[in-house]
Image 1 (cartoon, helix red, strand yellow):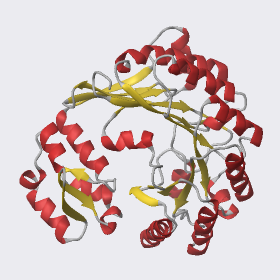
Image 2 (cartoon, rainbow, N blue to C red):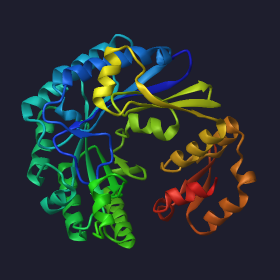
Image 3 (tube, rainbow, N blue to C red):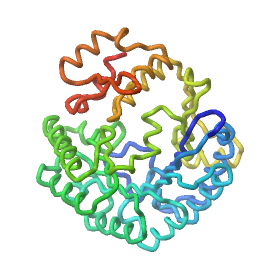
Image 4 (spheres, rainbow, N blue to C red):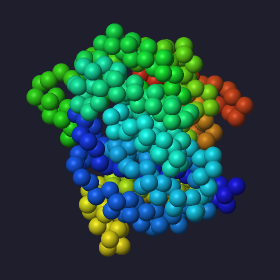
Length: 390
């Protein structure tokens, strides 16, 4: 056991893409010939700077996100993992890579696996070419099927599929077709996200010009419920509002965010989080978002972060409630009381009663104490419910 009792994950952001999707608000850039070697070196320099904060803790996951990290060469991935392995054991660790169809070939997948990646999250989004074109995705439904099958042949035993619910061309019939494909491919996990229109994206501009981009709220709720029911039937259980997995395949890395554990953020625009004092205060930092500025910071031995935010116990309590309510495990009320001094049943009695009576939440006596969970109805309004408590 590590001396601090803390566990943490490492998130590595690769910002480069073939093409920026219309809905994407992530820190990503379509660059024809990116300075990838320089960025890898900068990420490793940043790792050296951040490592002392976490050195007495247990690393449980590494996650390569983006952007399109499947544009990285396998040797670049291996270089990063080899350096981390000198400080933290990678044995049995979940090491994930986001993969976009059309960015890798079968031979690449073999090399990626040999480099140390053992979990792939495949950005399918839809098995309908009409939906993919509408979203601005740079791949076809055929390529999505091919990459999944190639990953299985390469020996990956932990594969996931992302799908998006609610874009205008996504009809019930097309969603049903998507879900049939999911069932036939039999992934270990699925992420199902509802389309949101974020500021600064092409979709935001199109919406401001009066274009309808998404289905109605009722239709999106119908698509969400349909997805939950289908995945349940084929043995992929919901464990978070947007995430589903077979037994034994819940995401270790993403779960760190929902349970308030620490994570090191490397790469342009990545965020990191660590406790300053045991659970009572914490620091969240954001890295320089521009890749060139990030690379320059490494060359000049400068600061990699663009901002830092100190989080007090009230903020941490609010975030714990917001994040843990998203999970099927729910929120342990004793945890809020012990760590942050917040007794929901005493301090938020009216709000608790209101949402219990409206069928949004339930209170359950479990061996570890009282747990508050969202019902299936409440999951459709999770943000609204959580925000009402503060």
